[in-house]
Image 1: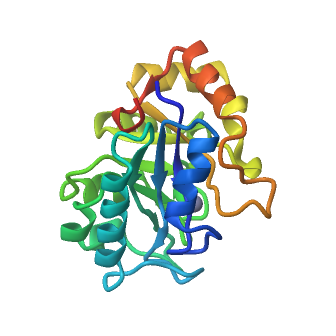
Image 2: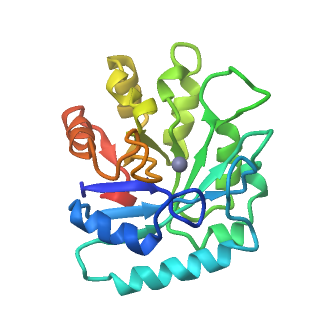
Length: 232
Ligand SMILES: [Zn+2]
């Protein structure tokens, strides 16, 4: 497993640092893989859209080439808001553009049946995945909420190779609360994990670039979980 953080925001959306600056910061913090995942298709905050996405992809591709062989691997991702009231149905994203990325994270996907008018559930991502050719993951989804009644949702993740992020932002460190039942289901259904901190800036201490990453890596190893190829 590489020392990675594949959930990071830059000035392309609501982050404080340019992607170039972040690459240098990540080098200083000895990260081996970083993934830029700026917000897209949301009205909640400054966001990428169909018009600005091609420029984002081109810029990051150049930055990736510039840093090849430098000891840090840059992945080009995106975080897509799926809320009914402010985001997009995963089935309506521009697949031709999305498939030019290295991976995509969908946020506000729930694995329980609560708040159906706001959040979408796993099926929406499963449907979109038929047209998505790149790795697909869920940002800050607490899969333990599927227990005890919605274990089928957890199975869908494994069956469709949808990875799950361990989100280290201070408000979401629920992975340390995963009980044995959740861990057992993650293993049973062969669900892959990744680590992300949701880093935006260094103004809010809750969102760090590398804090607790070693802890999360140890957690994955200790529990015998699998890491997704995007971060392995
Ligand atoms: Zn985020």
